[in-house]
Image (cartoon, rainbow, N blue to C red):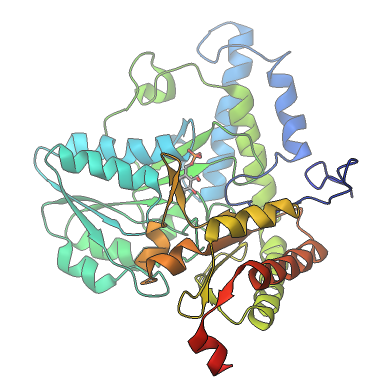
Length: 405
Ligand SMILES: Cc1ncc(COP(=O)(O)O)c(C=O)c1O
């Protein structure tokens, strides 16, 4: 099948290969079709009591049921938001506001998404005590460190389920049990793991979880926050009584319908897709291992999402400009991301890759390959070959490594 994101540019006939599915995914055509009527014919405001409003409300509640069934919760525990960032912010600020007076400690990990890290930073500035847990070289959060840091004064522990840069997966039931022993609530950012692996809110034992639609072939601008029944929290947005007084603002029915359709499809196809992506991951890993001797894999081979392979070039073996690497990949039509964040026009080493113990130069020379529903074996083989060729061309092997080989 010829997809629009694998374009043969008529001008230079260059084939573009999209390998940045962790950043976002194209919207599945089946999702677009499900959303379409809610822009035009079924456009009512879900708060109106007339028939147009009731139709919109029915679609909203049906979508809530769908998401709840995918995450194994009650529908009354699902609150629609504008996406992962809002869900993360609501979890941290919402719980802090309710418990903050009595409890002052928030625990997060060193490999959280900025939606958590920056929110935690604001809480710290507002007088909260924020503890950042280390990870081991595989990116696994230290349970010992959590045991030592969690106190009766801890209102929330928030640990990312599967990391967005490396894919490493945390053991949520164990971490949650440690938090609960000291009376702390547990939140997880499940944005990347959602529909990519089995996830049940009850099995994981968690109290709050964040999700978004645009990583699972749904639209951008919609997500959800799961909050276990009985937990009190303060809304972020105030105004109308939407989302049972927890999130003011007219609900976007097309987005919510698209989100639930995307989740239903991804959940149905999860196992076969997991197996297929695991095979693609091994293929990519094998080619890079053979062709790029200076490659260091930041994604663990086990306990990691199959759709992400994060690779650094070892600075003790090779000198390479990470930005030039990404640009050269783009010039040959391959869209990948570096492990760096761009702030004020200059690249900063990724806090996630640094947390694994990599030095700054190795961290800067990082590439994240992330793939998905429309990626073929052929595309990954081309990307791996091009990567090896570019590393060989623009990297300078260091003397010690030349002598060793
Ligand atoms: C782990 C993680 N959390 C949160 C977010 C933010 O989600 P959204 O883009 O829906 O605000 C992202 C998106 O990159 C993510 O990867």
